[in-house]
Image 1 (tube, rainbow, N blue to C red):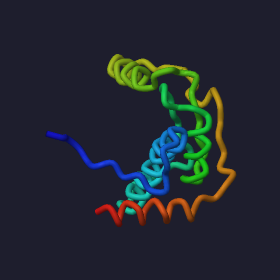
Image 2 (cartoon, rainbow, N blue to C red; image 1 turned 120 degrees about the vertical axis):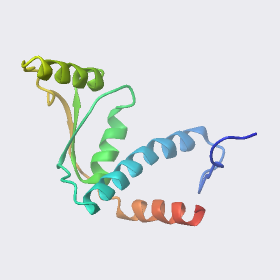
Image 3 (cartoon, rainbow, N blue to C red; image 1 turned 30 degrees about the vertical axis):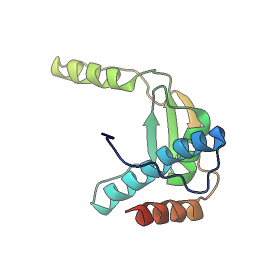
Length: 128
């Protein structure tokens, strides 16, 4: 029994590099969709996104900055989740952390990807 969804490969041949790129771009496009959903539901979406973790590669982060039209800050921290747990604990103890999360690399929007976003939404809607 197969669990999950069927694979959908649009405009891809057997080149593994194209498949990897499409998978990485889907992270950026999904990030954009999530931010749009938050905005539509009246959440305050900051123009700065702070990221960390193993998948935070410079090419992906630049793509996310371009697609979302937001500044992306890659922290020096390897795992921001652990830092968040520390902040909750320190807050509970009445203490603060002075760690500057904005130290690290910054990615600014450079390109517009409106047509890629439209193709992404069309592919999703065609599949559904």
